[in-house]
Image 1 (cartoon, rainbow, N blue to C red):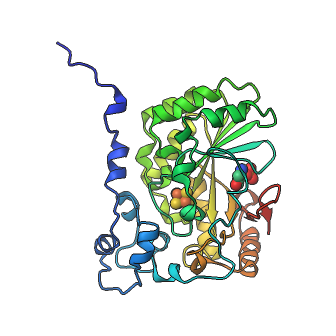
Image 2 (cartoon, rainbow, N blue to C red; image 1 turned 45 degrees about the vertical axis):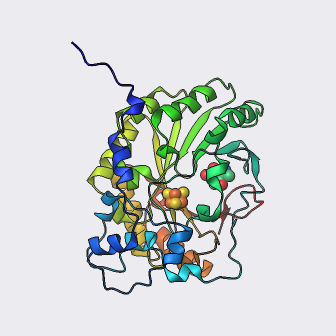
Length: 335
Ligand SMILES: *Cc1c(COP(=O)(O)O)cnc(C)c1O
Ligand code: SF4
């Protein structure tokens, strides 16, 4: 006799298990890296404000015993985050003002950005979302209905961008619920996904996700987020290859971060390593001035110099556009 079939939504997928096993205690993270006594200025207050979260597979790519590791710097909650800085705000990019409906942000012509979820597999300390009440503001929370109606009612929108949080932190059937509803909208021509999951938890790119991707009725662009060449490993390469074989175009956006990638060598290595995996650079973002992130800031002068040197070193298609997001602008502003 066959065992009764279990609906697959009730069985935790492997990636969901790995997600739950992420490290959330800064002391455990430091112990795993042999940095227990390193006196790095870990802040309990910063951890309480925006908890540490980092998948174990990502930790495995950090250098053991190196307090300056570029991957570690991105996730470590430090005392420096709690020093108030003039000019650094809670909503640095004007998301509150650009809200068009529950979880829908409408800033640029033709594009609607959906805040699908507030969850991420990793918590990046420089993230402008650390203060935004995304948990209550997601499109999913309103059952997608309001977001879908808003997009259906505006024929000027031809591209939907799934963002968050990380849209691929949603279970695949939940994503299919949304795209099934969007598929009925005749003026939609493109779908884009902004996700860091294939980089930080490549196991997310499983058969179910690929089947969902292959069935979508639009050309799909997946914009990854990796800031350093060391974020790529064999598993990330494989995840990217699978996404490409499912028909997606792969791009990468990075944030220029002091102590992480603020050198020509690091930026060139990121572009070259991305290309080796099958990803072209898209944007290099100047940091959004969000409270708690000022220790990552690189001056515009330095950013421009790095970008010029990068352009002098690499093939044109390996040079990302250096941009800043300015509230009220019609697009990302080139520096
Ligand atoms: C960045 C962003 C986009 C996408 O802009 P592109 O320049 O097309 O990548 C769309 N909507 C919002 C709200 C954004 O912040
Ligand atoms: S939204 Fe992106 S940058 Fe922000 S914490 Fe999540 S993964 Fe990191």
